Length: 276
Ligand code: ADP
Image 1 (cartoon, rainbow, N blue to C red):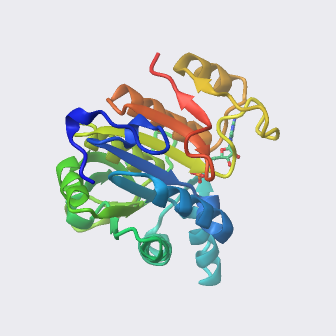
Image 2: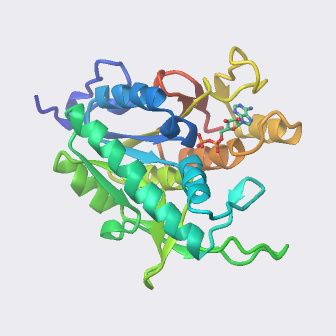
């Protein structure tokens, strides 16, 4: 049944962001992508979301594994991958090929008309190569996002297509760039927010942001930016959770209606990001 904008209807799950005129952007993390059982749980939940939706995936662990099989060393600085020319080939094959097409096939099996893309396809997401840092670190072919084309994404959604986006972008001069998947998800949700009410959900293997990362029961249900900064300062929040939350706060400040960090099987739970 077609819903109209003024019906203000809610979906079966009760999430207003699944109602008419809204879009759900879901980001699935590397550990989930690597674990077929977890991935199945997430894709079952994703398939149940009503209305337009976008899936963004990572795949860093799969890339590390494939690189090792090819005899290519993975080099990380501060948890971030150095992407030289050989590693760019690996991440392109793994993210845009293996991981993306497996997810598309699994969504097609669930009746979702998924289309696998990178930020390069349809010129969806433009980026520039990250400059050498003041400390002299060259991350190589890593992209920092400049712009995203929300209207093309919107057109795909209007056709009933579910975009599945792999974390690669381009610079407009013929170069692919490896780009953080959390940033891709934030960029897509923010670009869509100008025409639809968008929600952004980061799914990973833990219940949400935790006071004690070793204790799944220590969930922080609501996270403000001052509390986030305090928890980074005292070491409670670390590693990949820091850029994930930077992206989460950017999204909520830039007009995304609802942002949460949660586990694969609980898309309505986890930690809700607060705007103030
Ligand atoms: P993904 O690949 O799923 O996008 P990352 O591995 O980059 O995610 O970041 C998620 C990781 O952040 C978790 O696996 C966890 O080890 C770590 N982390 C650090 N601090 C916290 C915290 N306070 N609560 C939850 N996870 C945390």
